[in-house]
Amino acid sequence: MAKLCGAPGCEEVARDGVPRCADHQAEQDARRAAQKAAAQRTPQAVAARVLYADPRWMRAARGFLARHPLCVDCLELGVVEPATDVDHVTPHKGDGALFWDRGNWQPLCHRCHSRKTAREVWHAERGRRNGHAGCAGRGGA
Image (cartoon, rainbow, N blue to C red; front, top):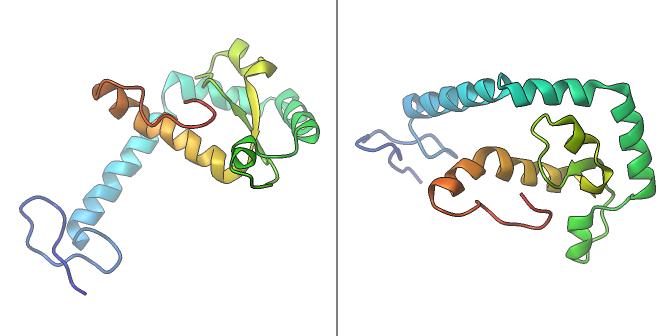
């Protein structure tokens, strides 16, 4: 079924499976790519890349997952899912002390970790503008 583009004032037909016409979808995709690129250039992102590249982190993360093999978010729902990622409950934002604080680590599956990270990175600012902490969920944000 054809539908109109979701961009304000546009009367073009949206492409199948996307909410906008080809021109407006391309603009949206370019905006998102620019946002992601800008996010990767922040001092916190640069510091985080250095921390995650440290061979000590790789060993510590593997050891933590060996001792905590199940995703804590999935377990809360009664689902047994292997943990693949070590999550920082409170985002470290490049702070080395918080990064290495094992009391701030939790085991998550990749899907839960990606969802939590998306909330923290892409939705936290919107939540602050609206007067709340953003999408509150298990594991903290």
